[in-house]
Amino acid sequence: MKSQFNPSNKSSKPNNNKIFFEPNGEKDFIWIGGKNPCFLALKNQKRKIFEIITNKNNLEDLKSFLDKNSLKHLEKIVRVHENTFFQNIFHQDFVHQGIAVRASKIEFKNQFDLLEELNLIEDKNLLPDVLILDQITDPQNVGAIIRSAVAFNFKKIIFCEFNSAKETSSLIKASAGNIEFAEIFVATNINNLLEKLKKIGYWCIGLAGEGVENEKKIAEYKNIALVVGSEGAGIRNLVKKNCDLLVRIETNNEVESLNVSVATAIALNEIYRNKNV
Image 1 (cartoon, rainbow, N blue to C red):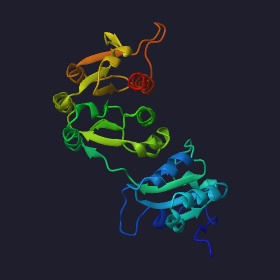
Image 2 (image 1 turned 120 degrees about the vertical axis):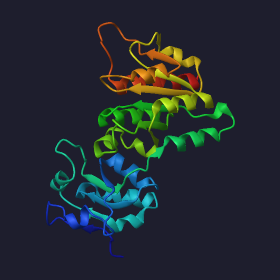
Image 3 (image 1 turned 180 degrees about the vertical axis):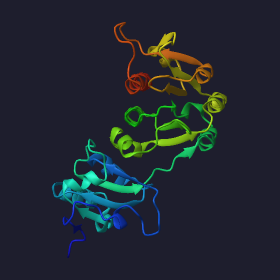
Image 4 (image 1 turned 135 degrees about the horizontal axis):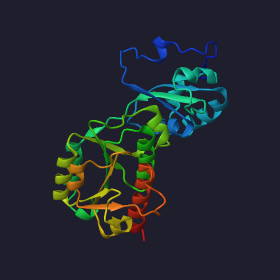
């Protein structure tokens, strides 16, 4: 049988009519780069896959992956190009590993969807922990936070509607593709959301340098909504006031502060560890 793969190495420049625009005029897509992020995106049934670009070195691995995961129907949209081709898709420092996927963006739900889901859970012992990012804009930090959150079973993640990171190639890569396992919600009003979460049965705990208690205190609580703030400003003042408790990550006095993604990972691990002892 003739292979459905369509290698094309004639030009290092993308055909804009074919690669960057859908025939139906759909432009709401994103480029995903890197082997693990691409493979996880291909397995995510919530994404539409428009095109797969690979270099020759990855072709056999890609073909094997598609075969093992019942994705052979995607072979017809595979294109083979030299590595120089990827420079037209990603910025110069992006580590693409010779593979890229053009896919639909993840559909973010809103805070009302989240509250509706949580209110339907009658047994409050079964409420999932949630993570709230208060105006964190750096895609590297947000991606790293998503990676840690998924690793420690905080799969419901809330972004602010404004002053928040968007889904980008860099964010997906920083998450090591784990954004595919997360449920992301967008909140128009974090303070209102915190009040509603408290009524459902959540403890709203903010991660802040001025917290009186250290991260060990978190172990005393269940049904946690963990709030983390931006790299410079931290959690906004009104959001802090609406938290039930502020905790800090304890470090030696020589270190002024930790990167927000590192501090968040420590707090998430503390919660996860105490649930599994």
